Length: 342
Figure 1: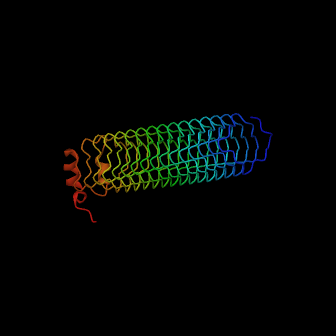
Figure 2: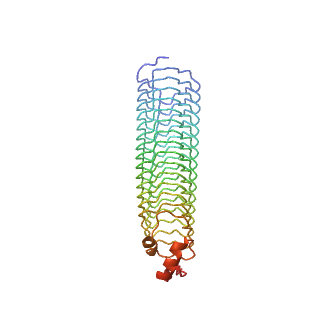
Figure 3: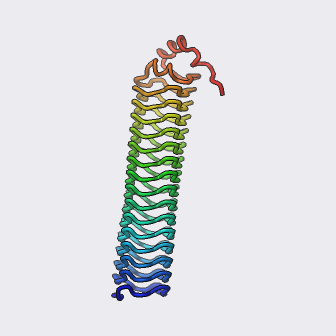
């Protein structure tokens, strides 16, 4: 269907209309009823769809580049492989929508509702998702490099293998999210909530996780080299075989964390709480343990650990040590084995 350019269709009732490959470039469709409309392959470039109702509409392969969809209802609509480059979706409702493989590069999605949406393989590079609701969204393989996700809600979202390099995720909610093998190199996750998140084999080199909540998170085999984990909450976290070389864990909360066979070369644990932590087989070459709390920690079989490192800790009360360390430290620094003040 060929509709004259810039057709005035504000508030029009186009429910169920057949608009396959229609030319609606620059059209004014503000507040229009497009429920269940067939817009496959339609040209809606720079169209005004503010407040329009696109419930269950089919926009597969449509061109929405630069279109205004602010506050539009796009619930359960199909936008698979659509071109949504630089479109405005601020405060739009995209709950349950299918955006698989869509091009959302630089799109404005501030405060948008994307709960349960399928964004698998979509391009969201440099997209603005501040305050967006993404709970339960499917984000596997999605491109989110340099995306703005400050305070976004991604609870339970599937981000397996997602590309989030350089993304801004400060104070984002990622509880129970799946970030297995995700690339978060250089991402800013300061103060982010990642309780129970799955980060196995995730790539977090030089990321900023200062003050983030990773309680009971699974970081087995993750690469955290040079990462900022200062004051981070890693209570009960699984860091088995994780790479933490040169990481900053000053003041980090690692009570009951599992660091078995982790690479901790040159990492800073100054003032960190490692009470009841498991460090069997961990490589502690050059690690800074100054004033670290190692009460009840299991250090048996720890690699490249020196007497000098252990002499600078806050306490070794009830800690499990190889006998060669225990005898010498007990003799030279008996105060380290006394019950610390609460």
